[in-house]
Length: 255
Ligand SMILES: Nc1ncnc2c1ncn2[C@@H]1O[C@H](COP(=O)(O)OP(=O)(O)O)[C@@H](O)[C@H]1O
Ligand SMILES: [Mg+2]
Image (cartoon, rainbow, N blue to C red):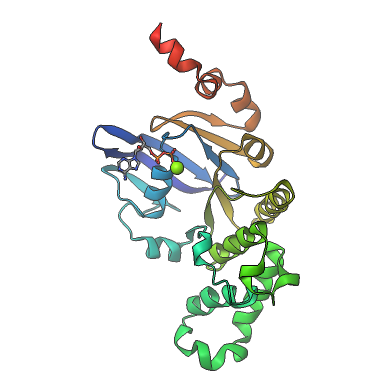
């Protein structure tokens, strides 16, 4: 399996707190990986380090074999690493199509001529249509983005993150705040996109049903370290993981 991303002894401390404690992690191409762990385990810090929103105290990050430890976020995006945007990045009054057109045009380096030539940018529009089909929003392309359901807005966010055609895409709680129908739709889309190898997904998620139904591989973080790493069935049976999630560890330590 080809390696997309690798960390070597990646470390980030906040004062005395080891948010990321010498983590060695490999992300393989095409393997849908979920990162889970209790609150404060270090999930967000790890993703921030990988995407360049934070710099580590020590350790290294490699993307497709090339060291990127200190590369700014926008340069990581150019290399093919993206992160889903939050809802704030959606323009509610613009149509779904126009929302996607903005990053696609700007990636084609034509943002300056945006207002003059929107209609004539056939290649950009084709790319937008393809994205809309991929995320399952083609039939809603002319609706103002603000009128979409919460689930469809999250799909649009995923589309925005996919606009640069990333090889690796981080999604932070992609189904947060959704009803079960929307959740299923988003999950099915992520699963399909992953199968179609449009991108390799790394997902941070709290909902264990989602994690176990969606993931090829699960990495469990606890106190800044990797507690367990394996296929969903292996993680389900893992004693250390059970203890952390059942809160038994605290009792254990007191003994
Ligand atoms: N900016 C920060 N300043 C101080 N402490 C932080 C900061 N960000 C995270 N932490 C601490 O680092 C640890 C890991 O946090 P975080 O990565 O947010 O965990 P998770 O996303 O798994 O809930 C926690 O103990 C948290 O309090
Ligand atoms: Mg977090």
